[in-house]
Image (cartoon, rainbow, N blue to C red; front, side):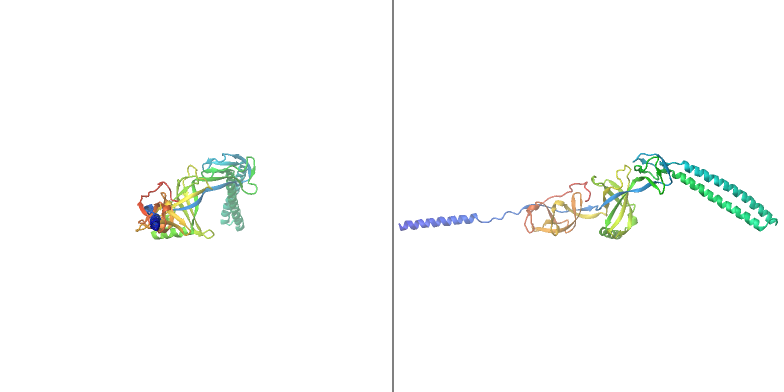
Length: 387
């Protein structure tokens, strides 16, 4: 019995050891293989950077049409909102009273000329008499004074006639330039110009058209530093550097023009510099008062570009993940710029030789070993403008 019992204990012990051995083999930790990630070198190429701004359109010329003489409005010779040519008569204020004033001024002038002629004749006669000592010096002086007074009267009456003719011209309110006229603000038969000039309507010149926008003081300093570096002056910009404009509903910037004014000072209240561009607007698609997106091209630069999806963000800023020579993931802090052809410009923190993780980002973490697979990155939308 004892032998059997011992044998049984031996068998049980052997089975327990076998079981323990089996358990130790099953619990051995086998690390997973390194994740596979897609890597690519940043694209390096020359790009055209742009300065972005928000601008508003303004008419090159806009004038309030007013009644400069008093009278009843006799005619309105245009349709509200119509495009008119320079010199087109838009309003007529009753001209008859002003025609009569011209006749009165002409009659007064004719009378003054007759008196002048008589006084000139008398002065000549008195000169002849005085030379023969028949007439006194006092009589000659009186004749001279009368002649001079009549001459002044003629000149005054000539001025009155010219003023009367000018006032008659004011009875016709004409378009001062090609433009579009707003709705009329007075009606036919209404008395206008009683105490002060009465506004009748407003005319706007729509072609060409201005775009006004501002540049921040920081951008101004950056641009001026670049100008100084390349020997560029303001005279090299005005009338030569292009400006692009897009409406809120436009894709891209379809309207092209040139810079035609740069303010000589930065506004201290806003810290911005006022800039203006002028654009062709023959189809009148741009209207005064529109808020628009403005693109101002800067000098081309060599840029390092990566896909936007390869860029992450945390509390310290933007970063990308790169794979080093040991296939270990590193986090690189970067400064980003605008986009070009769907690619984001990296201003600092990255070189064209770095292997940037562009696929499998969720599987990569800084300090982790990975299996890199080289991929090619290309622009996603060649027509995309810089943002």
